[in-house]
Length: 254
Image (tube, rainbow, N blue to C red; front, side):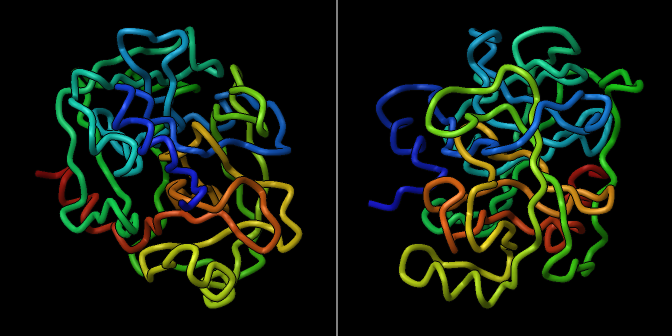
């Protein structure tokens, strides 16, 4: 079976709330939340200290953008977010989720259109550590080779999760090359973008899913799937935010 970042979706069928898809920051560095104030952690509210399973981006005072596969099998009562802290287990603002909106065309098999929005129980208090993300414009694209940053609290290789926020720089990869490299391993659709190095070594991996890929200050991708972590020629795959920009705005404004 495919060793993808969403491997924990399989585990989720057997263990509730273990939706920590295989997505972590590999070979990154420790960073402060003030440098990524739009970043949030998704948590199991019954275990907020150890229950971090995905990431997300603040897109409005009461809305968070994450990956569809992070929450599609969960009740909203099983999800909370922590914003404004460099640590997923403490500090900042811990807020319950009251509603989830999965993209209507999300495919849980191929992970196409891997977008979800979470409506929060109360508005976030915006400050230096909590800010609304600047999203890429609809139709906007960044050229292959553009260096971007992926951030999260996921595992740092095949050892354990990061307690403090980490980030790593990865270049946007050529879409056709990414699609050909994955071949039969995974279908890379037009709603996905790829980022990483030909030689591997730096990537998102377990627990980072749903978090942001940021280019030039704009959130352009949502950590989605991949084959292993930081593997050679198999780039990280992200849901392309530009392709969902209008849908995101329509939900926020509804």
